[in-house]
Amino acid sequence: MSSTPLVLVTLSILLVGLLGAPQADFRASDPGVRGGDPRGGGAIAGLTAAELQLWVVGLNAFSRVEEVPGGLGPRFNLDNCFGCHSQPAIGGTSPAVNPQGAMITKFPGNVLPPFITEDGPTREARFVNDPGGNPDGGVAALFTITGHPDAAGCELLQPDFAGQLARSE
Image 1 (cartoon, rainbow, N blue to C red):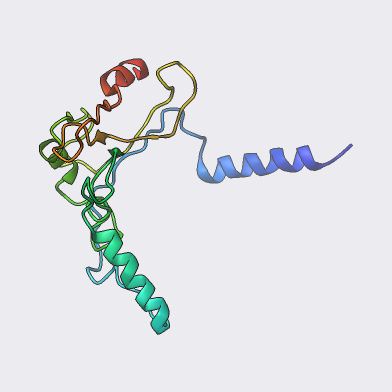
Image 2: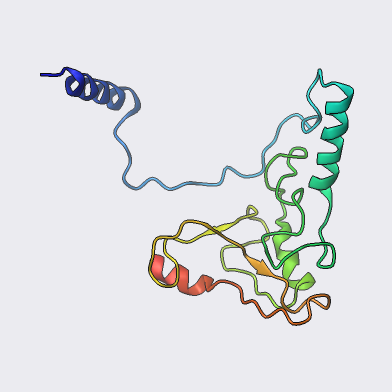
């Protein structure tokens, strides 16, 4: 008889004793805007000249606002990376004012999903199931370029956020 099951049970009992029993009602919570050293977000020390140049190229791409003619779309969560990752410095967490609210003005074919708030974190959506009831879990983009003057002919709809929220209750 193998001692592996006994070792695993003993280890499980020790972990529950140390960490406590798993919480069945655990829910993720937003810790809010990250504080910290405002000097964060820079290149790490010790990079070669070529590595530093590559880092600067990446920083510029990360900070650029994308436009429809330049390649944004057809579905997206925000029109730049920095908007979601700016606190306390480039590459950090959500800013205190959520930039996603401005997307409905810039892209008039959209409505603001009910879980996006001005003072809440920037978000992406993941649905438990797709509209056909099959397991999903992939990232569903919040907005489309539909209605933008440079997106003539685009008729993509946003996901059915209200329907998805109703199914999850």
